[in-house]
Image 1 (cartoon, one colour):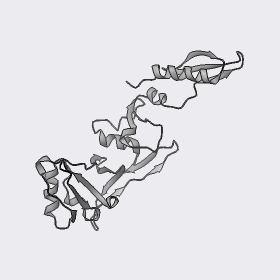
Image 2 (cartoon, one colour):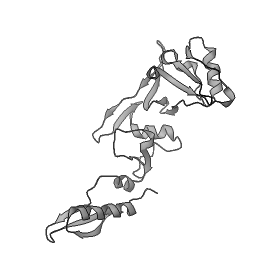
Image 3 (cartoon, rainbow, N blue to C red):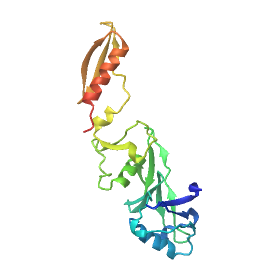
Image 4 (cartoon, rainbow, N blue to C red):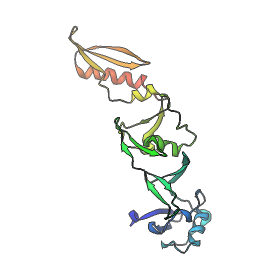
Length: 223
């Protein structure tokens, strides 16, 4: 049932109000929905909304869990809901509606979308919607958005962080060593500040790898 619903609002007294998805239209809702009591006064005012289940509501002691965020970009309104990005399409001849921005995967493996003929990386848009004070137009290398788990398809806000170019390179699955034929041993190295730091020579790959991981933990920080 919950898959068919757009909003699930929970209250301190374990009461739940469910509003059917198909009866919700953007023009019926205020853009800022921070006050739950205001939201439900609006919902109850419009007869086109069908409340499938209502229990006694204490508006003074309730809280809402509506995970919807909106922002303006390139003169367009964007909405982030259920880990999906939508754009508001005004239509003079037909009903206006929210259209999902699915975009396409670029040559680097990142999903990008078009907003007013300008391409944006989806993970940067998701971060911007959650952090509007962040400058999305600053494309310098030290204003990068990093995928913490290294999965370029995981664009949830919990998996994104602002990093410098160097920190972005920290979060890579580097081996950290190679076999030096002249010495007949494995040489461990780590990159820092544009240079390779020598970590020593080791008889086996396990020790060389561990030396790299120890140095990575100490030197590759995100503070």
